[in-house]
Length: 158
Image (cartoon, rainbow, N blue to C red; front, top):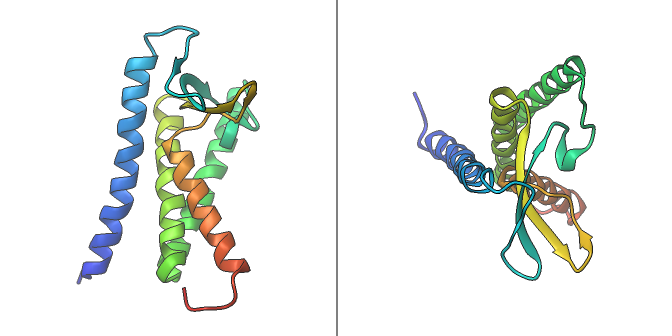
C-alpha cells in the first residue's frame, strides 16, 4: 500500500524536476535566439545560455564521446545511490537528498536528450563572474549545504 507521505515525497521531487525543466525550456527558447549575448537582469545577475558537457560548474568538460558517456554513467550510478539514501533517511536529511536527487535527474535528462546541460544563470560582481549554472544546480547545492549543516551542527534530531 502506498503511504501518503510517499506520495508527498514523489510530488516534491516531481515539482523540483518540473521547475528545473520549465526554466531550461524557457531559457533555451528565449536565450537560444540571442547569439553570443547576455541579458542583464540586475547589477549582479545576467542570463547567458551556455551548453555544459562536464559536471557541476563545467568541471571535467570533455569533447570525446566515450569519456562523456562514462561520466554520464557515473552520474547515473551516483544518482541511484542518492535515491537509495532517500529511502534510508528521515526528516531534513531526506529532503536534502530529495533536492540533490531532483537536480541530478534534471541534469541527467539534459545529458541524455541534449548531450549537454543548459546553464543560464550568471551571478557576477563587476568583473568577477561565478560559474554559470541552472536551477537543478541550485537544488543540488542547497541539498549538499543542508547535509553539511546537519553534520556540523550539534547532534539534534533534525
